[in-house]
Every structure is written in C-alpha cells, then in structure tokens.
Amino acid sequence: MKATTSLRAFNFLYFALLAIFIPFLPVYLAEQGLNPAQIGFIVGSGGIITIFAQPLWGMISDRTKTVRKVLLLLLICSSVIGYLLYASSSYSILIIFAMLLYFFLMPIDPLTESLNFRVSEAAGISYGSIRTYGALGYGVMALCSGYFMSYMGAHSLAYLFAGIGLVGFIIIIGMPDAPVTGKPVTLSSLKKFLSNKETLLFLVLVFISSVPARMNDTFLGVYIKELGGSSELVGQAWFIAAGSEIAIFALSFWWLRKGKELIIITIAGAFYFLRFFISAWVTDPYVLAYLQVLQLFTFPIFYSAAIQYLYQIVPEEWRATGQTVLALLFFGVSGIIASYVGGAIYNAFGGQTLYLSVSVMSFIGMLFGVALTFKYGRRVRAGRTTQ
Image (cartoon, rainbow, N blue to C red; front, side):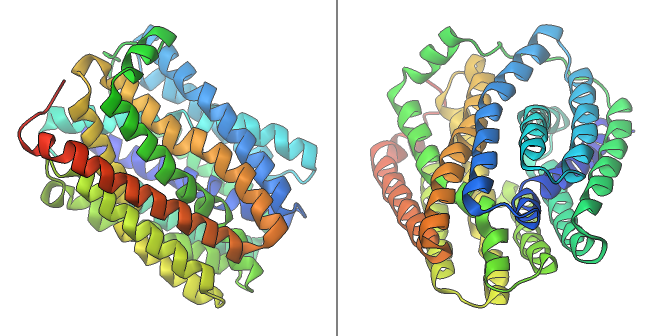
C-alpha cells in the first residue's frame, strides 16, 4: 500500500476516533448524570494532560527516531482505555479513564499532522488532499455515533471506539515508517522559539481565537440536548460541521495563498463571531444543528492558514517545535480555559450567555487579527518567507 493511501486511511480512522471522543464525551457524561460544571472539569483537566502528553510523546518519537511504533503504542492503549471509558458510569472512574485517554489519544494528532505535511511535500501533493480524509472520517463517525447512542444506548460507544481503534492499528502496521528529523521540544528551544515578537503575537492570536472555538466544541452537544434535541441531532450537527470542511481542505491548493494568511485568518475570525452570535439567539435545536455549516468558513480555513503562516515566520529547524506549540495552544491550553470557564458560565447562566460570551471573544480575536494584518501583512506579501 502506498504511503499516501495508507496515511489517508489512517487519517479517516483516527479522526473518526476523535469524533467519538471530542463532541460525544460531554454528551456521554451528561447521559451519566453529570452537570455542565462537572463536564467542564473533566474536559478541562484533560486539556492539562494534553499539554504535557503531546510534547512528551513528541520527544519520545524524536528520541526513538520512529513515528509508526509510537503510533502503534498510542493507538492500542487508546483503544483499550476508550472502551473502558464508554463502558463506565461512576464519576471517579470516568475522570480516571478520561484523563488516560487524553494522555494517549490526543498526542496522536500532532504526529499525524506532521506526517501529513511531510508525506504530502515528498509526494508533491497538497496537504489538504490527505487531511480531507480526516474531515471525512470525523463527519461520518459523528453522524454514526449519534445514531448509536440513540438506538443502542450510550455504552455502545465503547464497542464502536474499540473497533475503529483496532482497524486503525492494523493500518499502521502496514504503513512505512517516517523517522523524525525535527529537534525535540526542550525548555531552551521553546524559549528561543518564543523570543521572536511576531511569533509570540501570532500565537496570542491563535490562543484568543481558539478558546471560543473549544467552548463550542465542548458544549454544543450539551446545548442542543438542552434545547430539546436528541443524540442523533448532535451527530447530525457534527456531521454537517465536519462535512463542510471536506471541500475546504480538498481545495486548499486553490484558496490558500502565501502572503495572504493573516487576512484569511482574520476573515475566519469574523465568521467565528457571526456563527457564535447567531447561536446565542437560536432556540430551535434543529436550526442550531444546521447552523454548523458555518464551520465551512471557520476551523479549516483558520487552522490551515495558521499552519502555513507559522511555517513562514519561523526558521526551518524550529518548525517541529512550532507545530507542537500550535497544537498545544489550539487544542490544549485553550481547551483548559474553555472547559473550566465555559462550564462555570454554562452552569451559572445557561447556554445563551455562554454563546454571547464566546461571540465577544471571537470578535476580540478578529480585531487582533486585523491589527496583525496591518502590522505584518504587507511585509509578508512583500516577499518575506523566513526569518
């Protein structure tokens, strides 16, 4: 099996696992009787685990000079723990298994994204042509997970998660290895990486914009059910969101232009604001689910442009570090604040206030993007590619 073919298949399966975990863990926890504050605590604590787990496994991969063997270990552990998580009901047990799953499952993401970029560059194809299959897997499994929960019960997710993990394990066995060439993440490398003002301001922009996105990811399913929607509708909402990403990733070679990243990120920030502001006033769960089509103009555009911009403003030898830091900000640190603060807001004031707060944060992120575009955009367009 060609490297690109097996990697596309793995993207489909790994993001299918994420679709069972990220949007449906809060829904599953709510089904077990947990309130929004407790759900926020679990998801937020998982973000803390992710902060340490992602660079740890990245350094292990660097030191052992292998990605495939690390992925095999992470995936088999994730499959077993995922089964145990979705087969449990006790609050204390749920916390333990959720933390373990964050430790093993989430570090797969930056390793996979690194492989996507390296393999696509070596094969002379666009990153989006591989990453599209991840969006497809996420969308299909989000839809299936909702139906599984509705017709077979919440605990059926245990069998679904373990089954997909096993197939992914088999795919990885047949994948060619890709030795890590980047430097491992160390405190000294992080200090040097973050000493550049433009890099630091860009990461602040990513952080400001990712917190509201993570709040939505955590509490969308809970809010849909509060408005009277079913688990099936939650799955449909995430299918619409992930399905809309497919065309954007597939056509990234056409719309993602070097030197235009900051303005593209700012436009995505504007759509984040519009999406969340409208969500605050929606009272029909079906309308809220269909509104997720605005994902088309938010996450895939923001994240693809952010990665490409990051690769332009940092020297080549720091790209591995930059990729890890970007993933930590977008999915780790922001997830902690989003879960803890979002859970507290939701529990105290309700879903509408949460989404109004989220829209304000997205608006601030958009304004910050405008400021960075005026400060650095012209210099990038003038031809600067590295520093």
